[in-house]
Figure 1 (cartoon, rainbow, N blue to C red):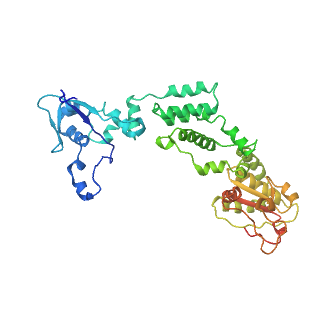
Figure 2 (cartoon, rainbow, N blue to C red):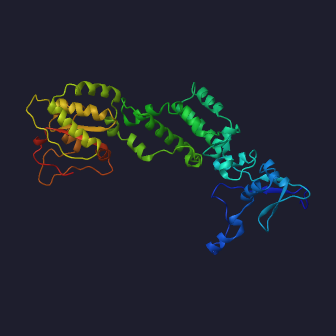
Length: 394
């Protein structure tokens, strides 16, 4: 047992802005708690005041402060030390606590601050976070060694192995800039994601954009972390997988409608649009305005065979699909559907019964892939619509 220690050791507390710890009992009155002296002042906040009032304080960091000043707990202020000295120690902080960890690093280096903003200021530049200030001071590594490790492992390792390596680095709390390592290496971490998705959906021609690939990769990383009693939510700078987006990617109907080459469609649209007649141009502009402004509406285009209706449908499809939006091209007969880009019959797309009776309806579950597709659709082109004599009930 240690009964006496010379010199004494002071544990220096600190806290983030508006995050000062307050201890109280469940039966305490809130107003009484807020009136207590220790709520209005703390060792850390009083250090700011000393830097304003004492020239000697401005030569000391927070860690060095107790060597020249003594804390008067009864009156809640620092007083210049007249004799003796003390060893100080700042409370330990885990890197997983984020900004508190980086604030602790700065308190070992920064002198003369009177506000939290001044702690984040380096060379007259105020940084938005304590972590950014640490990098500006050169107190943190750039994590390039972890990037190089993942790149080197990609020569022989699978995507699954690389993701497990990244998760191991996350859980070890060894990376200072996790999001930097992620953004630099995500293409390696997502190496097999598209291949696996094509197998799952049985769609060899499936294409995913960058956002979808990243989201699926996050989902795989999250599954690995959960198996190891962790989660991406513990790492504040790391994004979290979007469940709606994952459901979106796993929807085969949506994937088929979004698997178009937007660049090629945009070029095709320019060629088609340049050959429009005045009538076609007028109809096109009215429909596109309703789609772009999400106004909704029904448009009935009538014309004899050979007047360019199918040409108009094709131009509308290429225009809207080139923007990454969904157009459903349907027809009331199988032969007519073959003339449409990505055409399907109305009966197959909307589950319309072949033999319509008075109480016929389209059975589409609200949470089904088809229902989700319909909600995401910007335009439905229905060729030969009058051939469906009885309107189905959805």
